[in-house]
Length: 574
Figure (cartoon, one colour):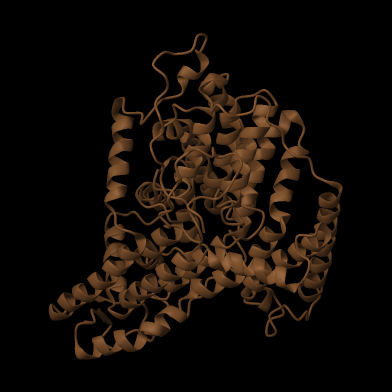
């Protein structure tokens, strides 16, 4: 893959953006510096002065942002981080085993995995048995790591849909067909939907939104901000399941099994809440854009834009063949949905639980990754066949191969993450830490719903320092999932709270791997732009998304007691 995604809206003479590869499957690193403006300010340039410049180094918040960036830059590569964590677990387990560290097992007597004496003892991995287990488990830790297979399978289908052009055309349709007074809403909504397909939202929709606003005579930076808010700030909201859902569910399941070895988490466990969140993020993002962002940015002054920027950028309308392709793709989805419904709706359907006849623990929910694969594969092939991007089976294979080619770093990261999670479980350090943490929370009387306010805020803060959602959750899930399970909360609701905090600060952290690409797009319309420009522009979205999403979480889960997803309890009985 090239240093940056090729796109006509990135200036040809700009410096390339070198990927730090911290978020799978393919990502772009933090930005280079952009040139300062000419010495004199152009006449009449007043509205845009509301936009902070450079690194926003004025005031406590500017200093906080600089400190955050410096702290994040001190972190090693995520792969190195997991290797160090795995090594640390081995060393700490040796010390804990030598000290005979142990805690009382809170699980009832006779529970699976509970020792006869009712104690959880640290197991040293620095003994002969421990070293043998590390060596013999190296491969199986990796191949048996839950998130690996599900991400690979789901991305095969998404890759075909992206290669055929179906996803890009769908986004263009949503934005182009929206009435002018609903343009902002359509862009935010399309941004939320686009995050099902890897980098498409960042590479396609964000610059496209700027072009749309430019063509409408509005500040292009406003459109860019609205799209970025939907794509990245609304990362955990969607009408569809994407590749991130099975990835996080797999990590959550691995962590939950530290306490309950038989616990299973399905990829759709947060789906109901995600579905509703799509409309909340769309409405809130639209309101923030109109109420705060657009008035603050004011009118756009083209004198600070790139010299090669056209006076009136245009968006290509859908061709007749593309429209036909979309209709045929929609028809294929309807047919596919009808076939699935035949296996789900009737009593005794083949996709229902053969023992209970219900949907809980049914082949439909347990095979949700297969349905994600087919949901993208089938319409992707149909669309490509109509428009000519897929002419034969080789093109289908190319689409899958292209998607797989972006996963090199992810696979390396998973290898080391799998070792870390396995060692954490083998040593019993995860269980001991969970019991100690749960005891502390109980002593502080901090076990009720208010606990999640602190957890959401903590997740949001950690995201400022480490940009990869999967890497953060692989590190923190083995700690927080067992801990909060022991005070009565299910892994599914813990994961949901994490996703809220993780999404809301995506748009203000330079550690987010697409931040550099976003800054390149911003600099195309304002060469004065720096890191602080983007952060100040996106901060209102972060503030209201965090508040609004947390309120929705409490209303949905605790006030109304609504399910967050299929087979997804809110509470857990240790």
